[in-house]
Length: 132
Image 1 (cartoon, rainbow, N blue to C red):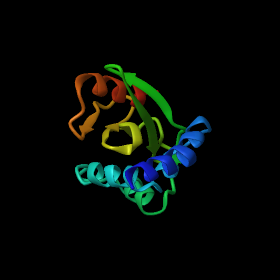
Image 2 (image 1 turned 135 degrees about the vertical axis):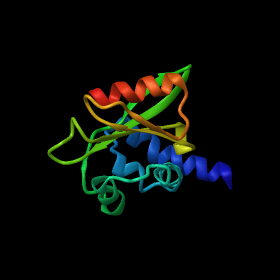
Image 3 (image 1 turned 90 degrees about the vertical axis):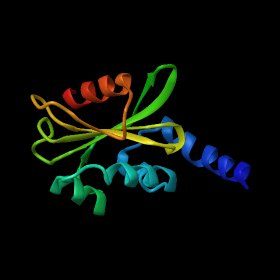
């Protein structure tokens, strides 16, 4: 059964990753959604704009970027508050297949708040993504 699930994933998701995937795309996949939900529980208080995005995927989001940290690839996504993207942003790193998620909330000029217990290398990547 696991092999079948992997093959379905590989045939449907892997080609899509070559195309542009957005956070709202991967959150429709159970593994990514589960990791997101576990991560999002830690974001307290959750900003209204992030709550809105979680409910209906309405928000400003960027295409996935792959980053390699400590020899392991991660998918990096962001969502931000409309009209205030530089100041109000949430960045998330997913392990391959959406196994686990790590995040940071912040913006230019604000120190990032980290979620999901990211390693120092992950914190650096998340902080850089918040600035970009």
